Image 1 (cartoon, rainbow, N blue to C red):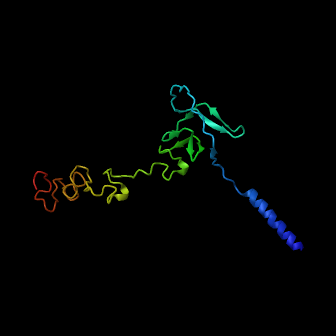
Image 2 (image 1 turned 90 degrees about the vertical axis):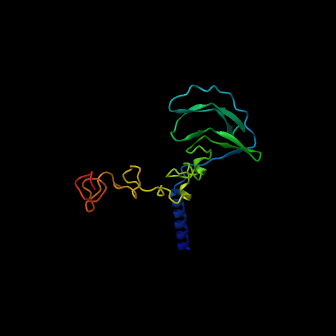
Image 3 (image 1 turned 135 degrees about the vertical axis):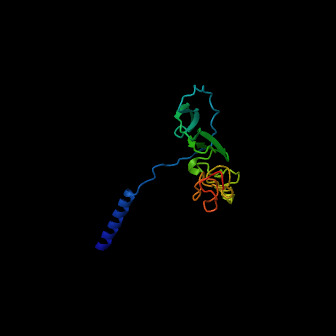
Length: 191
């Protein structure tokens, strides 16, 4: 009997310690659904643009204690290069209204990054060689279908007498004929 009590006490203590020691999620996602539509947006004078900031217009929020909407005035948000600002809004679905909080969207598609399968615009197919064929359908995604031109003189290596530019190894005079086959290996005007 005593052993049973000690065992139960130890398990209970371990459970309490484990519950206290378990880290909690640092960010909680809260979605608000209401049955009352928000009033029409109020007119606000948009101030002159400020460098490095984006104007976030005013919007309606929900006060659960008073069971009604209240207006929040517009404000300046510090700009985030490479992101599009999505203002807060109410969206109707099946007769209920859902509040979508303000957010920054990296690819500007309107889907929040935390729910976007391609948050950085990867839904646009990559085309590394810019031939108009997406990499996932291109047999040569990096332009291997183009003939190689090592010295970039516009003549493909297969037809270039000096594919590495200038003098070819084994051709002292640089006339494009190897020294072994050149009648005058020191004279570029004679082969």
